[in-house]
Length: 273
Image 1 (cartoon, rainbow, N blue to C red):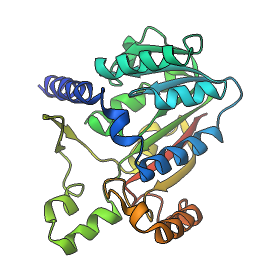
Image 2: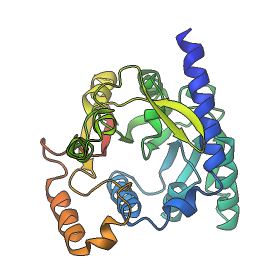
Image 3: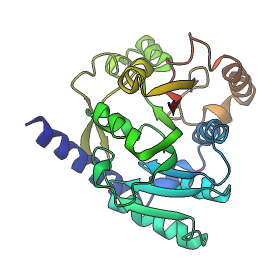
């Protein structure tokens, strides 16, 4: 029964993001904080990539990150469950003449055993909380070691169970939004383009404990802990000096114990022993 429910949720999420795929880049490309988040994630990953790395990307979306890493000389196998997102990715790969260095495959991250291209990979990467769309994250994590080379690394960008900025919405009377992560054991309802699916939230300790003892943690960074979340549209433009100050503060404190797991997201990188 649980497997059937999980499959239905994945199908609903795939339909939602396929419906949004044609306008996804237009919606987010000009958002200053979205671009800040993407830059932070890319800078983090680049620190751990060896030259000409072979990367497996999960929930690759329209291929923005795949194109970026390919442009830096890395081979990327970009996977996603959304057929619409894969179509956008393939168009982007063709536009930039990157078919020699980016491949793609329609595959759920809960069914990585079905991958036609099984690697082995130098790095596995998942950006912007795609992994929060499953209640079976343990299944995903436990499938990663077989796909990685010895010494290979995993970088995941995940939504934690507590977000400092969201909790402040209590003072605006938005109780449901402020507390939605706190009571998410059975998933929280989300919707995109009129399609509904569930999301779950995971702290870094969940990932670390699930992958222990096969992996060692290299880094955990808070993302949009001090900088506000991107859904506060126009914040950076309305308050440029404050926004600049907040980015400097986040750069300073992103890896401290207090701030690394209470942001809108966190970035975690682990290495296979």
